Image (cartoon, rainbow, N blue to C red):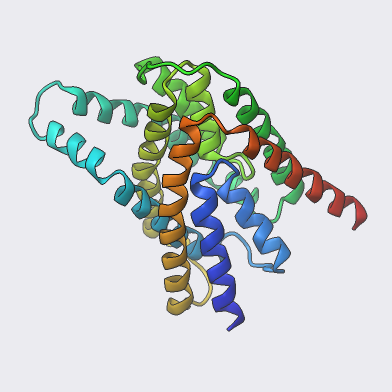
Length: 264
């Protein structure tokens, strides 16, 4: 029962924080730390990948019309808006893919309860969100140089505690891209990256420990439905320029974690 409850909590945390700009990886590490989950990254990898698969599916559900439009344009086999958008997404994936392949083992070590690192990166996330909240709104679309820079932000956001959506949306908005278009690009660009990471881990056989199918199922369902709700909510919040409240939240969580670490 304890393992099932832990899976439910982790699923809800993943579903909310994958889309809200407060770092899903950082909150998963904090949740495991609070619940006394001492499993190493390799041992909890299957649950982590399952939760990310759920939020990837949630993204597909929310943006199903956009994805179908892009695929329809792609299969016309000619230059059009869908083809250009797909290539922009591929360009944005390159930095994170390079970092993931070249520094895989070093990155895995950062996900073994490096709580101080998480708190520090949450502070950085808060600063980015605060700056983006003050940026002027425009009607600009994502361009080639924008996609490359946003992709670098996504690669940096692999670090636990830096929000991927927060980093990519903030970077996009600071580059002058329309807020709604920034959120749309941020959420769509991560789907193929997650699927690629899942395929790599499956081929590498990096899953260790016993497998509890029920726990995985509970975590998946919780992450999927909370992810849909959080994604829709986040799109509305970005349009209204209300990112500063998430900045204050990141500052508060980071301060609380540092305080607990000092006391201990």
